[in-house]
Image (cartoon, rainbow, N blue to C red):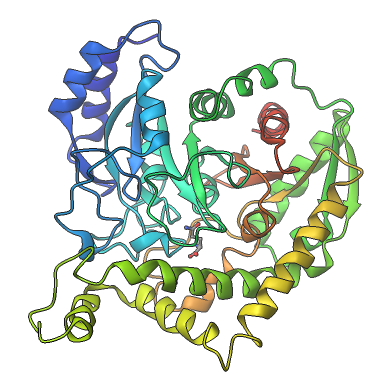
Length: 435
Ligand code: GLN
């Protein structure tokens, strides 16, 4: 183990002037001081970690990537952050993110986009953009982010890191700013699967690292949803098919399965995301959070002015979320999305019935160029087609990097609700066979 004090110095050196814009707040002095107090026998002693800026860390700024919260200081610490600290991790600072976690590239942050350390003209993926970049740049060994529709798996895939979106409800959401609460939760990202498992031991409870012991492809039953291999960029399809072949040649059993309602996943996800986000944003009215507008004649006038501080993507979602839940429209939109979600969850359960895990790519493309999709919401949303399913079905899903030339490619593993350790174990197998 590297001594915590030395680990912090190394992290600060690797960070330098943060050319990736991965951090919104760095607490160098505090980190040095906390490192001195770490018990060297603690399970995460020597680990320097970053925390996404939508998780509260007492006494430190928390912006959620939004101008609305510039200057806000968290009055308490999120349970998951406290758990990491209690396990001996030293938190270095808060990472950049899409505004209120609404995005897949990191570009909707009010504080400028994050660059992908593997290719600085490319996005690192989002919304946990700084989480992915802080690990890929070798600054920290663990990043805590969140995942509503892919926000930890997308940066893992684009940056070449491992990450897990746990079963919905497994990790405490206390201190996580809501975007769409029925879909999201905190989620860890690390350089490898063992790092994610160690984080889960601290965040949830012991058993995850243990589950990796003796992980082997022999006898692993892998369901491959047909729909997951459709419409992929060739430079994603090739390595994913390759990895599946390697798994099979090493003794895993591949089973083709179908997820017929998967084609409705993206539409259902976005309608629900809009609806929940619009409701979650009501508190950012300049009275409860944010600066009141100069017009203080009435609450409506003042809060309308305060809301001008939201960026275009958040505004778009508030408008659409209000529309899809309006009395006239909700039957056609919101209620239909709720039904689609139930059908999808049944599909996933059925597909998982005879296998241990489902597998396929994490993202349909490799990291795209900065600026390439940010003005085209539908192109941006399309990138989430393979990740939203696990959030809708509330099941665990992780991403593990494949061994490839050039930009990273993530391989996705999904499992039954509550079987997070099994997902990590299968990810470890993929890492060993094709990582
Ligand atoms: N890209 C998805 C969205 O924009 C997911 C974001 C997330 O997981 N927070 O909603």
